[in-house]
Amino acid sequence: MKRMLQVLRKAEMLLLTAALKADRSLGMDRRFRPPAPIAVRVTSRPLRSAAVLAVPLSALGGSTFGAFSDGTRFLQAVWLGVGMTLFFALLLRLERLSQLHYERVGYDPAARPFVHRPRAGGPGQPLSRLSIRWGVLTVIFWGVERAKGAPVSWLFSGVAMALVLLGVVAISYLAERRRRRSPTR
Image (tube, rainbow, N blue to C red; front, top):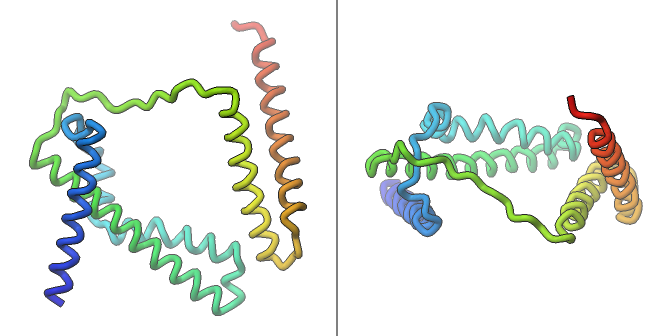
C-alpha cells in the first residue's frame, strides 16, 4: 500500500510538472491571479466535488439509454459514474496542486486576466460550425431513438436534424434582419 501511494504521488508530480511546463510555454506562469474562493473550495475536496459533478451526469446518461429498466445497463451507468468521478477528481487535484504551486511562487496582482480574441474566420467558418452541430445532433438523435427501441436509420436522423438546424438558422436570420431594420432609440 505504501509503495502504491509513492507511485501515485510520483505520477501526480509528473502531471503537475507537465501542466506547469504547459503554463510556461503559453506564457501564463507569472500572470496568474489568485483563484476565486469558490475555485479554492471546490479543489480543496476533489473527490467530493467530482462526485457532485459526475453523479448527475451518469444518471442523465443512464436514463437516456434505459439503465433503470435493465440491470446490465444500470451497472454500466454506475461504472460510467465511477470513471467520471475519478477523472474529475484527478483534474481537480491537479488544479489544486497548481494553485498551491502558484501560492508558493507568488501571484502577480497586477496581471490582467487573459482575454481570448478569436481571429476573423474565412467564409468556411460558419459552414464548418453548422456541419459540426449537425453531426453532433444527428448522433444524439440516433442514439436516443435507438435507446427507445425505435429502428431509426442514419439517413432519417441526418435529414431530421438538418431540418431542425435549417429552422433554427432561418429563425435567427429573421430575428437579426428585424433587429437591423428597427430604428435605434
